[in-house]
Length: 389
Image 1 (cartoon, helix red, strand yellow):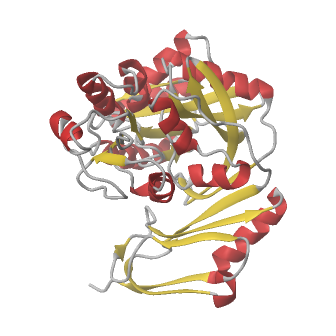
Image 2 (image 1 turned 180 degrees about the horizontal axis):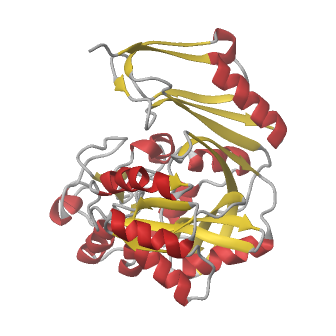
């Protein structure tokens, strides 16, 4: 029997290492990214992509980040295998394209526009009204996101978002300015196969370092998703041109109704696929691989629980000199995983706060899970030696 063809994963995958290692135990995986080695060979071009997995074309292809989607779409076309569409890749990587498609589909989005200078931002903020939210036009996740509550805050906010945007491969330096809606926030995880979209889980997140939007925790429960929000998320994914694949839609429920603030055709980071698997049994990465190889995705929940991750960040600038964890916590049945993200000797920053560790916990219900999360966070200690001039 010939070996099972590998699935080609395009783009950085370190944030999905736990998920990839799990899937790689049963499915060969190759990587189109020299920096990623999580269980399979590396392929650095269309020809190498075939040669690196035994001289055969991959069984399918997927990208794990917005930045990698355009390259993945091009590579899928070059190799003649299933992968993300060019349209959905472009919309996921560029927020201006996504906003246009969502608006054309009649879906609610915050009022906003592209700005290329502080002067543009000041004029746009008069139109949208304060508070405003600024972030790179290229989809870099939460990187570079900041809020300005009044005109006096705008110049610093613009500089922060613009500086982050300069690192983007697409639309470098360009910033999206939009209204900052007040309301509850939820991110719906979607699976699309044959242009049919299912919402399989809801993620509720907490943020720190206002006015920056750095995530401090995520919670996933097995509770039923509001059907109206699920329908809205499915329409958003379809508006982006997603025919097959895993995605997510961020929604803010305001007093005037829900607003879609983000939609993209790729897995989220921050251990969210791991949380969905722990809470529901649905493996989003496995579903993405099944779709990429022409199979029906397994999206039926196998259990009902809650899972959360604490993203422990630096409170000061300096060098990591110590790491410890409460020994009793290591044996706790609710601790699913503890990972040190900044090894000893790593320089870290307070703002934006560097990620020091992540603590993944479970619980039978949301309240218990959040209690375990608080205990897990308290048990993790990181020593930072301050920098001296």
